[in-house]
Image (cartoon, rainbow, N blue to C red; front, side, top):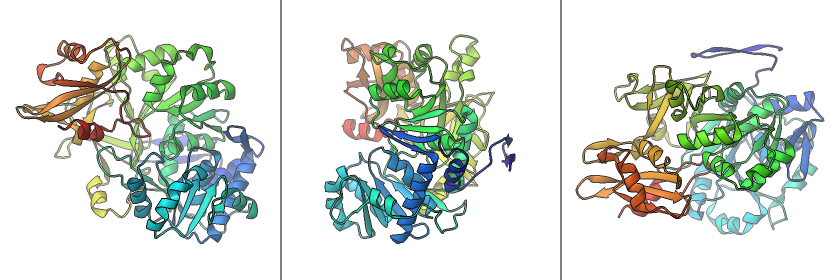
Length: 531
């Protein structure tokens, strides 16, 4: 069809001339038909056209089916960034299986817990992880087949040999839009990771919201600069690009030199970065030596950008930044688009820089109090949302699913305020509230003040046990200059914050612990400083 409509409780959006597709494999198939010789994927010296990519995805899917992959069987992926990761993201759901990306930075017990939780039938891993896989195998009862990417490893089948050995015809399976496609494990910022079940439809619906917000074009060249095991890369960059027939360039690392080099050499127009990556890039001493003029827009998500940092990024790079707020469970919920990022006047618009924007087209977002009623402007409540991009539930965790999905809404656990125009301002997590001497303190508000100090590069605020107050505020910071002391930081806060919100103590460290999305792992800091 030449034109189509997406109807939601929130809005009606007309898509033209693209065709609305909800099955992941159909996106690849369509691109191979329409743009067979256009470059689809770039990784290092490897380049594949859409036709080549489509054939490789089909061959891999047929190989997985022949290895015994059945409907909704899980396939775990343990590897670094590479073009193979993109192929797996489409081939596994295309074979009616469920892809389970595994965070390569996890410790061995946590990795084992995820693999056993998912009951992965097939494990595909990079050859560098072969020693680790050897140590895990005896405790992985569900794994029946191993596939290695790279040099051959004993009983593991070769990835490239499988692709070469199987036909590139469409897999002989019928995939439905409500079939599970991915099992993304949460980052575990407040506890053990949970497996989030996303269907084909939920995934594509989530990507369409980014396509609309960023006005993704056929000629765009998108950069994947984050680890591919994090689902945000798929939703924020890969799918919107592929939906429009755009090219994807994969970075091997998040080193600023590699990112800047790829922007220049591949003439990147769009992509996703975490706020820490953007901070590192704009402060890189050789930034002016790279040509970044091709950049049209850059998504950031995972955590709010400190206002002073965002202003600096806008001044250095131009008005190219899109903020996205969401979760693994509901994907995108809000956007703050470039035209809403005003840095000088009028004041009521400048203050929106501290927000995460307004709800995206096909998601309903509310901020509610404990009774479930919408809060008034300035009142703090919990962010909840619903839409076709919502998860099916947590894998094998019915009680956690019931707690999160109430009355058709996903309850995020994020606290926020909302203004008269619908802009949402996050103030923290329910579990991260600091109650000191009976006063409620929101960590993000203290952090915003600390970030105003010119000597601070990164900051996180936590509550620590206090005999007199119950909890006291502790600041943990990374310095930009060594000429700053903890007393300087506390005094800086004392001059700008209410007495009860001033940090009672401060620690200086080399780097804040973060998950792949850039979120600070406050539970790690609390464990470290709880005494």
